[in-house]
Length: 289
Image 1 (cartoon, one colour):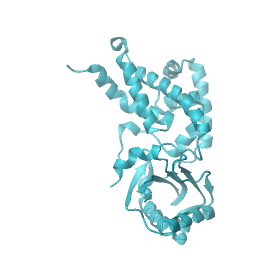
Image 2 (cartoon, rainbow, N blue to C red):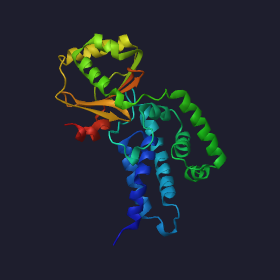
Image 3 (cartoon, helix red, strand yellow):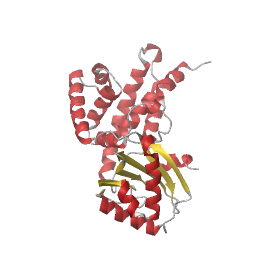
Image 4 (tube, one colour):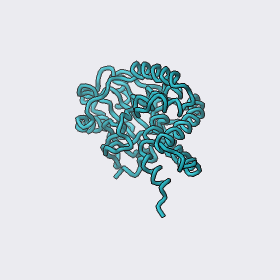
């Protein structure tokens, strides 16, 4: 017999995943939350629920809020810089039909859990303040204030939207070649003067503990890394799109899978995001040749 409860959950799942990923900044944690949400849905009085998606979104939101409490404690002792877990966006899918840029996720990470939930539910997923109130166990007016505060913070923290990622493919290939061979002249032409490089090793892979600011410092870092690798490109690599940005997946000789995303502004690279924490890149291994 057809399991209508499972079918209803699978129909809502892309929207639930999109919300959970933005709330948590982690593919793995989002999947765990959805597993818990499905178990709770199985024991719910499904025949009495009129709005399945709304009900499941409330469950997912509350599970994410619980997860964020422990995540914030872990973040306090996180070694070095934290970046969201990258997600492939090569193919436009219903799961990620809204902005999942690293810039947005970093801005969301600066919000309180309730601000983040109110902003995402109302501004990103078009939920009414009544539905937001039901999910957060707050009054609609309180949720309106949460979303308003969050909106101001996001607008202040989030830089302008990057250009079309498709236009950055050639620039990404040029950056990859220049950074691996130590071609500082080419890199100088590719990078903005105020470029920033942020890397996340999570204490499990080599990475800069603090952001690198400015073209000269980034050039020195890239030149040093090229010398260490004998100015040769890794055997395993792939151009792709991560979080809506042109990116490169590579596997170094030490086995570390690295995701490098480029935020391109006016034809030059303004931000370089390097994720090396194996816990955050493991799910991308199948995407490599």
